[in-house]
Every structure is written in C-alpha cells, then in structure tokens.
Amino acid sequence: MDSLERLLLYRKKLILPRIYQVINWFMWITYFCAILFLATLVYEHGFMISSDEAKAIRIIYKSVWIVFLLSATVQIVFQSDEDGQKNTFWSWVINVLLYLTLLPVLFKKPDAGDEGVYWTWMFFHSHYYRIAILLLYSLLQLSSSLVRLLGRRTNPSLILASSFLVIIFIGAGLLMLPRATFHGISWIDALFTATSATCVTGLVSVDVPSTFTLEGQIIIILLIQIGGLGVMTLTSFFAMFFMGNTSLYNQLVVGDMISSNSLNSLLSTLLYILGFTLAIEGIGMVIIWYSIHNTLGMTLQQEIYFAAFHSVSAFCNAGFSTLPGNLGNAAVMQNHNLLFITVSFLIILGGIGFPILVNLKETLFYYLRYLKWKCFGRSSHFPKQVHLYNLNTRIVLIMTAILLVLGTLAIALYEWNNAFSGMEVTDKWVHAFFNATCPRTAGFVSVGLTTLSTQTLLLMIILMIIGGGTQSTAGGVKINVFAVILLNLWAVIRGANRVTIFQRELSDDSIRRSNAVLMLYLIILSAAIFVMSMLEPKASLMALTFECVSALSTVGSSLDLTPVLSTAGKSVIILLMFIGRVGAFTLLLGLIKQVKKRNYKYPSDNIIIN
Image (cartoon, rainbow, N blue to C red):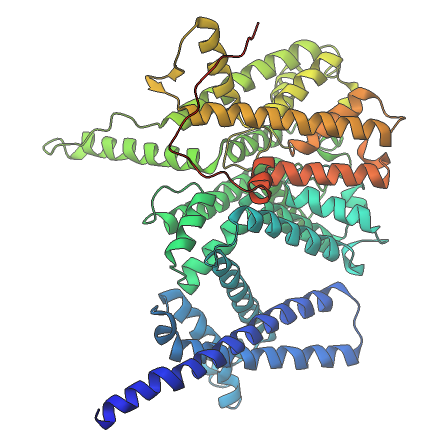
C-alpha cells in the first residue's frame, strides 16, 4: 500500500467521521440559535423593553449572526461530501445575502458624496436588512430540520398533528404578549383564539377588534394563513426549494401529504399551492378594498389592512373579522353587496381544494392554447384532450353548485320576511347566497344567527357537516365523501353491485373510507354534544349542537354561545376544532397500529339487514 492509499484510507476511516461529528454538533448549535433568535425577536416586539434589555438583545442578534455565517460556510465546504447533495441555486442566494451583511464590517462608511456606494453601504448596514436575513435563515434551517424528521421513518400523521399543536401553543403564547392585547387575556381565551385561527375555524370567545391590538390581529392572520396552507406544506416548500432536501422517502411522504402523484411535480405542486393562495388572496384584497373605499371612514392604510385581513380570512375559510359584530356590522350591511359577493367567492375557491384549482388552471390553459391555435396555427395539428376534468373535479364542482343553489333558495324562502325583512330585493338575494356559502365552512356573519328560523339553522347544520372539498381550507366530512355516500346509497337502492358515475366505477376502498369517515364524524359529534350538555346545562340543545358541529367542521358560526362557555366547555370546543382541522382519520392513523395486508381471505357470510 503506497502512501497515497494510506492517506485516503486514513482520511476516510479516521478524519471524516470526526469532521462529520463536529458538523452534526454545529448544526444542532445552529438550530438552537435559530430558535433563540425567534424567541428574542418575539420578546423584543411583544414586551416593553428597557435599555439594558435592548443591549442584551443586540448581543444575542450579533452572536446568532456570527453562528449563521459559520454555519453557511460549513455547509458550503462540507455538504456535498456529507450527503452527496449540492447547494441549490436558492440556497446560494440566501448564503450570498447573508455574506453581504459583512460589507459594513469589512469596509468603512463611505462619504455621502458618492451616493451609489453610500446608499449601498447603508442598505447592507441596516438593522432591518440583517434581521430579515437572520429571520429567513432561521426559518429555512428549522423547516429543513422538520422535513428531515420524515427521513427517520417518523409517523407522518403524528408529525402533521404535532406541527399544528406546536403552532397553536406558539400562537397562544404570542397572543398573551402585552403588546398583543389592550387589557390582557386569559390563557384559555388565548389558547381558544389561537386554536380557532390555526384550525381556520372562526369561533371566538372574545371580541377581536376590542381585545386585540394591531400586533395581536397580525398574529391572528398569520396563524390563519399558516393553518390554511398547512404547516407541513410551508415547511416542505422551504426545505425543498431552498435547502435541496431530496431524500426519496421525504419526497414520498410529503407527496402523500399534499396529494401529489408524481415526484417530478412535487415542488411544482407546492408552488401551485402557494401561488394560487397568494394570487387569489391578492385579487380578493383589491376587490374588497375597492368595495369599501371611502365608505367606512378609514385611512388608506386602514382600508388596505382591512382588505388584506378579510381576503386571507375568507380564502382560508376562517371567518375572522376586524369589525365589531363581524360582517353584520351596520357600516357594511347596506350598499356593500360587492363585499359580500367577493367574500363568498373567496370562501368557495378556498373550499373546493387545491387539486381542483390546479385542474381548473390546466383546463383554462388548454382552452387558451386551443384559441391561439384556432386564430394563428390552423396549419398545424392540435393535440386534443378528451378528459379535461378529472372525476374528483367533476364531483366537487357539481356538488358545490347544487348545495349553493339549493341553500340560497331555501334560506331566501325561509328568511325573506324574517331575518331579511326590511332589505331590498337585491340585498336579500345577496345575503341568502352569502349565508348559504358561509356554513361551508367560513363562519362569517351578516345577520344574527339567533334571528334565523329553526329550519334555516337545521339547514346550516347539514351544510356544516358536509363541508368543502378535500385538500382544501374547508372542514366537514367533505363534499367528495358525501357524494360517494349518496352514490353508494343510490346503487344499493337500485340493486346495483357496482357504484358508477360519469362512466367510472368507484373503488371499494373509496366507498369503505367514505362510510367510515361519516361514521367516525357522527360518533365524535354525538360524544361531544353529550359531554357539552353536562358541562353547559343552561344552554339549549340546538345551541350546543350548532356549536359542536361548527367546531368539528371548522366553520366558526355560533348561536352566541361561545363567549359564555365555561373553561371546561371551551376546552371541549378547542379539542373539536383541532380534530376537525387535522382530521380524525389522521389522528387515528398516527395512534393505532396498522394491520398488515394478508394474502388469504376468510369465507364470506351475510348479516341480516332489513
């Protein structure tokens, strides 16, 4: 063995393991510094700090900055040797932006005469620039570490549920900060509000505009956005887009979470989810701002904030509002039909699900290409597609249209001369449509729910149970599940041995899971109503049923019961909201050991039914 071979063997067996061990320790230090930085940032903006505390905070920021610079350098030098991966383009961008914070350290402040160099130096010397880069780097590191947990064969269902729990408790802690409220808030109300926002429900035990300051409302809307998109969706996007986490097992698990059938389109699916969300919310914000401009006595900044808050809240099906009395406030009840229509369509788009939005986008692009070919390219052959809409899209769109039309007509019929009395004809139809949309599953209010007839309330309970589409921001048992159950019922009534729709046969697994989802929902709902009837003996059965259905379906509507609930009652509603957002099936899959598939069958037999 020559000296070169000895050197390579010595490097592989003795040196590299030590280096990787040191790198592993250093990464744990980086994760700790990321958490420390976020905690310090929250403390700085959540409390009134003294001059001594401000000095300590600056020392922490500087220490974290140094650690992050060393971490970036270590990853650049050793990452490709460590796991066979190279830094992605965007990770290089982040590292370069981080290294640019060294410019004011390496070079003295230039004279103001050279404006270009001077303002460049001032920009990179800015405290806000450094904080923004440290915040981005912290989020990337923590997102990457969370996604890497999937590579350790950790139960994805438990990770999903745990991620929501972590965000809820963090949100509750943030809402209890002195700067988040005007006069403070109890821990149960903070936990209730954080759960309602993260689980995009909308039930509130306190009045939002009079309890929470601007900082508190911003915390709420951030929780709504995180909860609407899904914690794992955001963390997976950050990790894969910036950090280049390409473990095959990680991709399979993340793909299953976001219902992506192809690993090649995994990142594009994540981009679609984020892109659709921001684009629709942006368009909704502009229309809402236009609908309330110069009508509510707000400044331009207040109008923009109002529009952004309600656009996010509507698309995420949260139902939170910054107006006293929600959207039933007298200031918007007249001459604001465009506001109610815009909020309604934002709720619908958020509730049909991201896979349907992607399918609709692909269909729209197909027709645009066809129109272009029709006008300019008739000499070439146009590849026609037979099935533009997949089965899931057809079912969701048809069921959504049926429920909206029937719901609007029924509410208009029952409330025309009741809750809608005194309104103009156009307003009545707009509010009928709005109140047929909100139970699936937004929770906005335009008229007091206690003024509605019993028939309307029962209809709303049915709509709340059905909910929106799968992989959406809505709750309930989902439209897809409800449609499959109805199709199966119709097949049994007709004596058919197969369940078919649109020349497609539904799989036995889809039918079994749909029936199980509905049964599990009803079991949990019945148990919750029973427990609440003991905890809240003064409340009516209708109010308790409405409250439990609203919480489990993450709707957010209430018959004025939420603010007067006891601590125990609020705890039950918190649990229902969490189960409704994460999903009872997801929780059970994470807690119950799955049976292995076997290659044999027992003899079949029949049970006497009817």
